[in-house]
Amino acid sequence: MPQPISWKRRLKNFLFIDLKTVAGEPSLLAVEPRLQRQWEEKSRFFKSEDELSAAGWYDRRASYYAEFGKIICVGVGGLFFDDDDKPHLKVKLLSNDDEAALLEEFITIVNRYPPGELTLCAHNGKEFDFPYLCRRLMVNGLPLPPALQISGKKPWEIPHKDTLEYWQFGDKRHFVPLDLLAAVLNVSTHPLEWSGDRTSEVYYREHDWQRIEQYARDSMVMLVQVYLKMVGAPLVADEHIVQSD
Image (cartoon, rainbow, N blue to C red; front, side):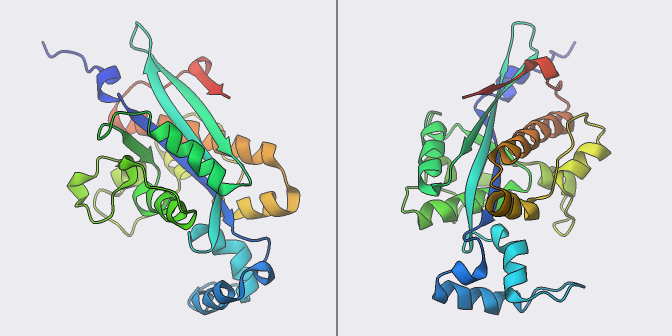
C-alpha cells in the first residue's frame, strides 16, 4: 500500500506572503516632479471606459507599480502540524507607515530560514508580490535576502509557488483574483472586503489601520486555504488559525 503523504515534510519551510500596497503619496500633486512627469506619460496608455485624468489614474492604479507605490502591510503565514498531522496556521501582520522599517522586519523573518530552503507562496506572486518586494527593497537601500535573489535565474531555479500560476495551466493571459478562485474551488473563507485598488483610499482618506489589517489577515487565510485545496492537502480548521504579535 502507498504511504500517506506527509504534509508536514512537504510544506516544511513554506512561508505564505501577501502584500498590501498603496500609492506612494496621497495625490499626484504631492509626487516629486520628476516622477510626476513619468506618471503622466505612463497613464496615457491606460484604457478604460472612464475618462480619467493622470491624477485620477494615480489614485486608482499607482499602488500596483513599485516605482510609484509603497508597501504598508505584509501578511506572512506559516504552517505547522500537530501529532495527528492536522495543519495549524500562524499569521503575522507587519504593518507600518515607515516602509523601510516594515521591510527590515520582513527580512528578519525571512532570514530565519536555512539558506536555500525557504519556499515563498503568494497569489500572482511571480508577477507581483516577489518582484514588488525586490524593487521596494532596492528603493529603500536594503539588501535582498537570499530567498529573493531571483533576478536572472531560470524559472526552474526559483522554488517559489504561485496559486495563480497553478490555476493558469500555462495560459499566462488568464488572470483570476484570489477571492474568485476561492469561490470556484468552494473554499470556505471570510470574503474580502474590497479589491486592492481601494487600499490607497482606506489608507490615505480613512486612516483605518484596523480595516487594512483585517483585509490582510483575510487575504492570508484565503491564500493558504486555496493553496492547500489545490495540492490536495487538508485545510486548516478555523480553531487552528492563530495570529501572533
